[in-house]
Image 1 (tube, helix red, strand yellow):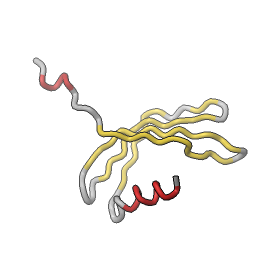
Image 2: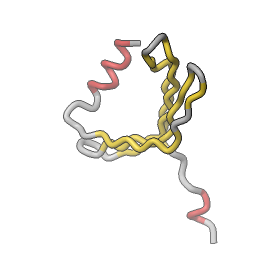
Image 3: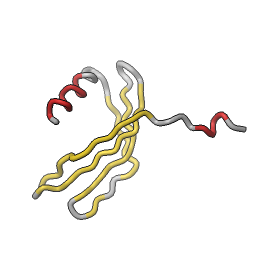
Length: 79
């Protein structure tokens, strides 16, 4: 997994990342964040991101990440 994060991080070198977490709940040893990441320096884009964390002792570790582009809002084309 470390190689994957390095590869992804290398695609965004020199950019600026803005993170907006809309939901940040935790229960016991599990937590997750749901929000948006905006990278706008090299190629402007906004992606939806979900991270799932698990507590191991005193540390929280990322155990799952999902990101995709938000679908178009179908209501915008309707009267």
